Length: 165
Image (cartoon, rainbow, N blue to C red):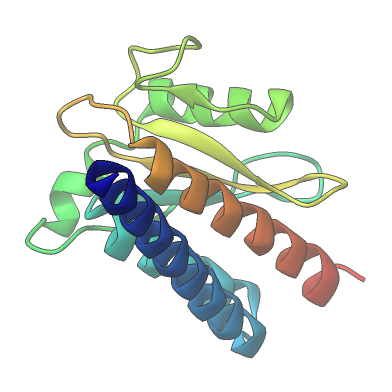
């Protein structure tokens, strides 16, 4: 019984933490006045959550990748993150846009990439792609992955509702 109670307590704490992070992200996204602020906000939250560097490729209305935005984790040089941007990585990011599905490191699609790429999408279209640099090529834990997807989905909706009417 004690083991079960401890397990329930741990799960309750996780749910409270998840709710707190998503609520904070939602509040901060509401205050964003431009797409650039939205990109910076979601990247900052993801870097904080995962302690991993992030690359965001905004997507134009034709579905093409725009210039990447770089968000290195603490103690990582900006120049080291820039080295990851190359033709191969951009191709994986573009595949993510075209297929509206994750690809890259720790996935079954194009696993030789240096990052895991996730679409940031509204209900209608992909607004951007987030590349997460998984330095040790270990997948993101399920709990953190669930938070990440919720944050990216909310970001896609914010971009659709606020800036694309």
